[in-house]
Image (cartoon, rainbow, N blue to C red; front, side, top):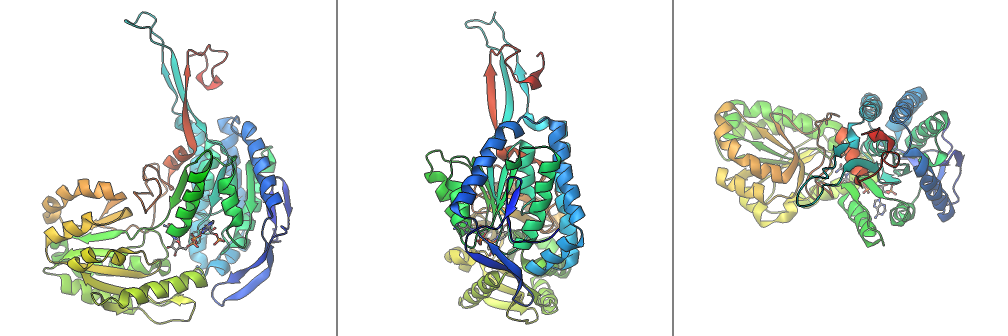
Length: 509
Ligand code: NAP
């Protein structure tokens, strides 16, 4: 499968007439291959018209047919073979092993959604029979099911070029729900996007579906994505990226004549709380695991542990000493884009310039395109007095907050913004102290975990990858796991419908 820099619209693929841009080999900063061309307004209109047209038939596909379609996307992605791994690795700077793992997760996710679709529980069928004898008024016959929202615009993320991109979680869950998808390709991995897009396009054709079920658009700027979100035929948005980008799209969606939901996953610093007994008994061990999690993938995970809360006490020095020794061993790593690397450098410099912040340790220095891991510390009172200390620095940077005591730690905790994850490091002797905190933690984050770190998100029916703002725009949902399908569904009640008129899924009930 060749990379041609082409838009995928309906069954066609052709070069857009918009501004050209290039894929970049992140490790060297050099251009990779020929130019990609952005979509023009006419291309966007064509993709939207086709998606809207496809919705009427795609939403009526049998669950079995939809499941087979999702499985064939998975098969086609695997069939792209090594070219996909090589391209994604070059465009993102992520090692091939990581990309292979992510590809397995991506196809596994598609197959999991296929299973979910076959089982059909997401329809949430409810039948509440009539009771004409009920007093004082007769009770109507009510049936309920979930229906798909309509075409969905998906913005892939830079840090998961497969699992959160063209055929990633947002696309898989929207297609599973019965919604056509138009993807605005992330400009940091356009070749990867095209290869995966072609795999999806082939699955659409092989499954005999309307060609508008899937579209892939490129853009050198923001016009295409903004036009998609503003268009009346788009009924929901899936986004993973920066807070600024997510807020811009939410603003556009809310100003529409018919506002629509934007499911944006944006920014989180994923606090880690180390409790006193765990700190005293195994502070050094926790520090080793923490630095391993912090530096994984150059720290470019939305679940990266960016804040550690700990009360002064026995074991804190051992924790910090070990963390400093471990981080000193961390090699600098290529970051996803020059822009992200620049933002990382600015963010760490800004934090370092604060009088209340000290450097605990640094990783090995690298090239201009590599991120150097760094660990800072501050006090609980400083964090309480300076909200900027909570700002996300995307990359391998974290801040240890030394709280005077547990009461101050609780105070700091309740000052935090919404998070994707909060990790508790606890021994049994800490349980009495930890238990009363749980209700506060539930209000703060989508996933609470014990004696682990948030990096490594299991794709599971019981996973929540979400959380209160600004972790996401809507903390009632998840972007990982089968529950993600509910973002793209809406319940409809059918009152007193005669059987021949009621949706066939209710049979003769
Ligand atoms: P990004 O800059 O927000 O871009 C994400 C996608 O949205 C891209 O397709 C981008 O287009 C588009 N976009 C951005 N701003 C837009 C706007 N104002 N209007 C229309 N479209 C817009 O995010 P990123 O490049 O993936 O990563 C940058 C930052 O995002 C990181 O530094 C980090 O803070 C955050 N991030 C968070 C997570 C998370 O899971 N929470 C994951 C990854 C990144 P282009 O392709 O043209 O740029």
